[in-house]
Image: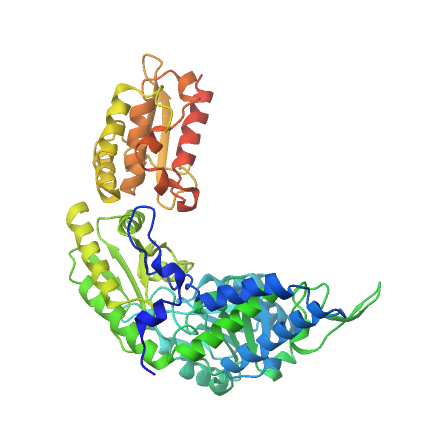
Length: 409
Length: 142
């Protein structure tokens, strides 16, 4: 299946947008959130127009249809990620999924003195829950440093850090650097010392087909909105033996078998963790997104295409006076992200100047302040590419950046 | 159209210069120019937590006082040139004015300059926070 980018772009109405300043949109903020194909927008709209009702526990037609759509989506999405529906918990986001590992598994299974390992490269979603749990339970939190020369995890340091650990939490792909961590190696290392592994795949899942059962991680967090799906939904994939060890996190309706004034008997399996009105429209939208991805995208081919664009951008940007590119976007396994700074044009200014040319990039610490600290910077500008971007857009971006540097430095 | 009845001659000239810009890039280039010639620049060594403007992605600081004639004075400094440029134009608008007038200051010239689109709250550049801080300090100096 050849990647027909023009055809693919025609599925995304927003990519045709002309901005208020008259410039055509060039969307390079995909690591923050991806755009949505029309089928996703239509599926959600159709739900609200035709069969919107609260799922479960009702005997009317609309509720039946809504329930079938919600559970059908679970079946479809879990299969897309190479697992079964009883190993997938809907969450509000990848961040909530990582909190579910912290508060639904670690809080029930770890005690004072137990060790959780994370890394300096992580998004705050894979740091802050562990810090908070550490305060609550007296858990020891260890950080694997990054090798700042090569922008990789320091795997030798990881070998040491995981000794005696109960849980190793690692990002699949860095949201700042686009570095694809050696997750298979991390899983093997962690399991060899008896530790469970929580994988933050918020940035990995849009670029690489997750096959959860084959991968061997115990937990895996995913965000729908970064992979053509809607905002407000994500999931935690959980191995069934780890799921058996979990206890309730957010509590209330829907997750119970029986409630008395004295106590509550909770549901089993994933049903224990999805309290409140289910994310029906979002699940339906995500279902449409994975169907669309399956029908239109070969992930290996898309990775090669994205890599070709982002590696070319990085190599060209390194030639612009004053620009520093962080990480190694040129490396084959890197994934579509180019983080950069100019030595005299401040990052926020650069973000505005790129926007003036129609280029959407992200500016800031990208919720990865420990990584920023390790790299010795406060923020970066970040251009992130997905399969609907084109080499022409990349060329225009590099030309505009060169023009900015010429005029403003 | 913004109300230009309160604009000084200097501010009106600035607005005219921005209105004659070809595109956003030229407007931002001009803003960088004003950043370079801030009339009451606050040196970096005087930046501290007390005079920080909150809500900026970049660092921005304002110190307000009265000059010998009782006129208001806003000294400002920011590490982003776009913020520094906006502070410079605000300083041009308020410096020397009676604090009573500054306390009621309306930065309508931003709209006239064609910059209101890039100063939406979601951009978190803190410009309106800076104006609020200036107005609040002016009230306390009345």
